[in-house]
Image (tube, rainbow, N blue to C red; front, side):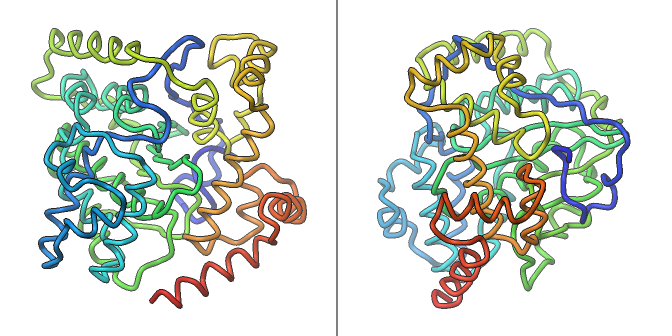
Length: 373
């Protein structure tokens, strides 16, 4: 099992070599500018204009989601990630557009990623730009986490929602990959396109908006939200990149990371969300990523009131809920993706977490969706 994707992807299946992971360099004493579960508006600032295209007044919807409409005047404003999920759910219902999140991402640009987007523009190559995004998106977004893997001749950029009880993870994934492709086209040229795009959502009735934007095969009911492209593209040079501007932006971002503290357990959640569907998430490996001893990891988690196994199970439960609710991925495949050797072991674990079997959870979710529709 690798961090790439499930068996539906022909391009990246049956790779002989283990993938190379490019993960954020999270040091033991590092800090963030945002508290866990919060994001800068950034891409979400496009929600109001998209609602206007549907002749829907954005103000009451934003208020219904528990937000102040004035916040949407400035993309640097901060909102809870959970509120974004609630707002997207309301938007889908009010517009009757099941790909609303895709439209939001399509309308955003690399500059919607704030200072991280500007750093990407001044990176030397596409690979450097994507690694800058993976390492630094935490100053913009503390509800989702990106990762970049390389396996044989393909590179895979993945975007994962890791906040518990997140609504509209499918809409957030759609929008995140849409703006990621926009950013990559701004760096490589408007004709750039991926080999394929994988989405952890049920296959929509109208797939044309996805094909039109990504200009590549789009596979639904996948385990992750991923953009697959040739590994050689990582070496594409970015026209107009300024090394001096890059150095200034890197220095400023490091200052922002050190501006205020973060919860140690949230760093663990971010790392686990990227790596849990691979075999690279043991406590020893996470401790190595954090440049601390395994016993130090346990002690610091104990001080925060959480154990490593409890956090791991929390993230497994979150991934399982998303896949059961938003996709039709078979239960056996979900179990394997989460590291269970047998589907029965996954069923027992899920029953402990939720009081229901995975099948009942999925069936209840589908009935709820049909009742809402």
